[in-house]
Structure formats: C-alpha cells, structure tokens
Image (cartoon, rainbow, N blue to C red; front, side):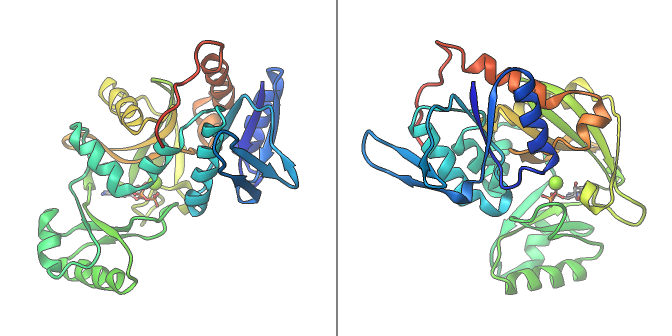
Length: 301
Ligand code: ADP
Ligand code: MG
C-alpha cells in the first residue's frame, strides 16, 4: 500500500512510529504536511497538490490533525475522500469529536456517562449556569483547549463566577462541568482501534494538580480496565464514527464518565506503558479495511 500520513512534523514520536510500522510491513509511507496541500474542487476530477506535484496513487490516509489546524486539516482529509482514498478516520468523524459541544450532545443522547456539563457563550445569569452543574467545586474549560490548557478548577461559586466572567470577556465558548473529585486527579486513556480497546493507561496528576495530562507533568501507569469502562470507550468511539480514538474516562462514583474522545491520540507514553505496538495495529486495521471489496461507501461530508 501507499499510505499518506498527514502530520505537520515527521519528527513527532507518533508520526515516526507510524512510518516505521508501515515500512516494516512492506508499505510505502509518505508524511504530508496538510497546511502545504492545495486542492482543486472541480467536478469529477478532485486533486490535491503538494510541493508543486499532484498527489497520486495513495491507497490510504492516516490523518494526524492537530487541534490548531482542524479546519484546513479536515478539508484535506475530505478531499482525499472525494478522490476515493480510504481514510483511517473520516473527516466528518474528526470534526464531530473535535467540537466538544457536539461530541457531548451525541454522547448524552446515547446515554454514555459524562460529567454533568453546561455550555455557554455569554450567559446573562452566571449563577444559574453554575447551579446547573451542582455548584462549586466545578471545572470551567475553554472548548478549544488541549493538553490541559484552558481548564480551570473553581473551588467556590465566587471563583467560578470570576473565571466565567473572564472567559466571557475573551468572546470564547466554554463549558462548566461538575468536578469529579473521587477520580483524585487520575483519568484513564483507552486506545480504541476498530471496535476494541487495544491499550489503556492511567494518568495521575502530580501533587497539587488536578489535571492528569502528561504535558502537565502527569505520570502514566498500567491499569486494568473494567468491562464497563471497555464498553464505554468502544461505544464512545463508535458514536463519533472514529476507527481509531483515544477515549478519556474518569472513574466517578456513578461509574465511568467520558471526558473527551480524541481523533489523533498520541502514541508516546501509551505504547511503552501498555507494552502494545499500537502503530502496528493501526497499519493492520488499514490493511484489513482497504482490502478489495471492503471499500467504504462514499459518504456525505
Ligand atoms: P484537554 O482537552 O485540555 O486535555 P480535558 O477536558 O481533558 O482538557 O481536561 C484536562 C484534565 O483535567 C483531565 O485529563 C482531567 O485529569 C482533569 N479534568 C477535566 N475535567 C474534569 C472534571 N470534570 N473532574 C475532574 N477532573 C477533570
Ligand atoms: Mg484531555
């Protein structure tokens, strides 16, 4: 197979591992920076050009679209779809999971556990919004944040009001969430490939911090997940329409609650912690899904 790995940086661990795994299995892998792609949207002849040449002959695409380039990145993935190239995660699924409001609404509709969550842009009644999630302590998050940035814990209603006022001043969308205290600064990342959780890890926030992101100094360790956590993770990924996803779960007193479904989950950390060749499993899934006769029907964008 000739595989396009859409990534802005070939030196990133995940990108390198995917190239390595593809090459080891006899495929040709090319790393393509989405921001350098340009396209024509002509009827019947969709094309993508890159560094002065037309991209041709690709059998599959692995999108690794960073949060800061979601808009253009998903447009490039969509163009590959228009050209009939198999994409590991479809553009519409990436868009769906990136939009935290949309993702939460879909998960809620299907009865998947999540922290009680309120969404707002410029609420007139901040106190009522805080009440909606049961009052302080609560967490206020910018919807477009990643790696724990823009996630604030508010221990009192007064603190929550101040943070909400500040976010409102930024003209940004945010959500207010019940603080899942019993998780004690730990969350579980489940890596879903196809319809299975192939690896998981627990991330524990460092002392004095509630955010468990590895970028915030969180520590990863092995974890055994429960059947309920396993089914929550696979259902969440399936609902988003993602073939590969990192589903983040908190252990709450009411069972597992989904915090986030990530369409380009990082492989660093989880491969070594869980001892699983995740890159290899991703290439295996591509092989399976691009076999003749297994082509995904062309979907609406
Ligand atoms: P990001 O997209 O920036 O990673 P998250 O929503 O995943 O934002 O939040 C970052 C971290 O903060 C989580 O990994 C978790 O440890 C902690 N956290 C977020 N929301 C809650 C919550 N409602 N209750 C308890 N901890 C939370
Ligand atoms: Mg997160």
